Length: 220
Image 1 (cartoon, rainbow, N blue to C red):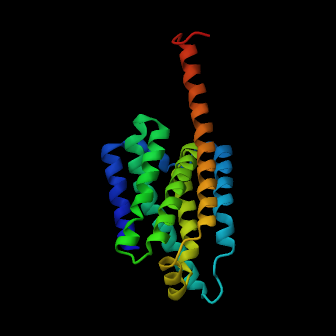
Image 2: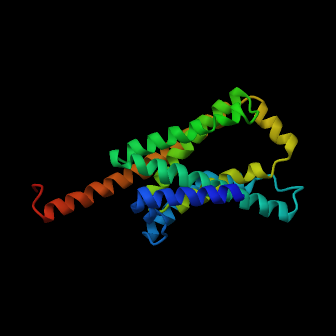
Image 3: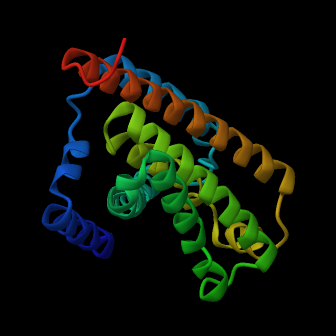
């Protein structure tokens, strides 16, 4: 927890020094309608796993600490991947930035095989799922205008794993992959991310065209 909090603060400082304009995404003063739609997309992804998380046998304090720790993971990883990495590539367009930051985010999870004891098959499925999840988070951030939405969705998506017992966790991560669930998740995340990014791009194109028409930069 302390490490993730300190590291998050460091990445915010790096953003402030190198890309200060990106700090506007830490604001919640955005379009309420788009924020609510984005929340709906996040709930569609994470709602079921949170509702059916393995709460049984866990005392309330363990559930609360698991939630706080999961949210800390979301804060730490989203500030780095969707804040810093995405921000540096955004000059090439939101699609390039989304793809690069998502692929990078997925490959970051290779460390779970190298140092974390995960099986190769499980880790490959995790990398694919994480990459697609990152793409969806890019869409949520760009559409809603705030990084707090992907931080929340990220934290809640990691929350159920915090409630797993050590034996169940080891069995899941050292065994094979559930490829059907993985492919369904990848498809869902890619479609949701694409839809949010597409709507955001269309909105930005209309805004730029309106500015061009106003100042006579483009023809009617």
